[in-house]
Length: 116
Image 1 (tube, helix red, strand yellow):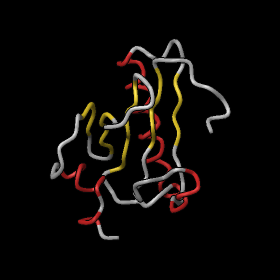
Image 2: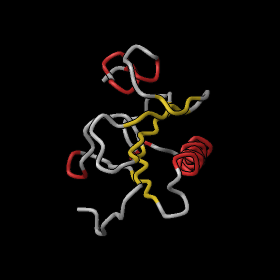
Image 3: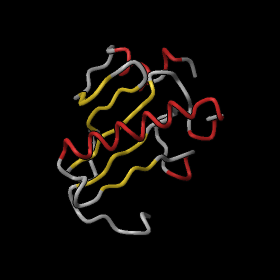
């Protein structure tokens, strides 16, 4: 898949509209169009990475930024105190539907465990 074919690359570039809640040089965050919780935000790196399986040690700062932004957004959304979940799916069996690394920030209701 090329970046031009990737939905999330196109969202990061601004070619596809999204309800953005954050953007910086490394990360774009936007509300999921099919939320499974009152707060459901997707956080993506601007750089195309297919999934967490492709991450290498040199990506540590990027992953740190993604998780830090998730925490900032949880506080902004008012879900940090009650609790929230940050999850990434890798591959079809885990439910990954877009081949671009993304974190789901979920909260605003009691979340069950195990997740599915």
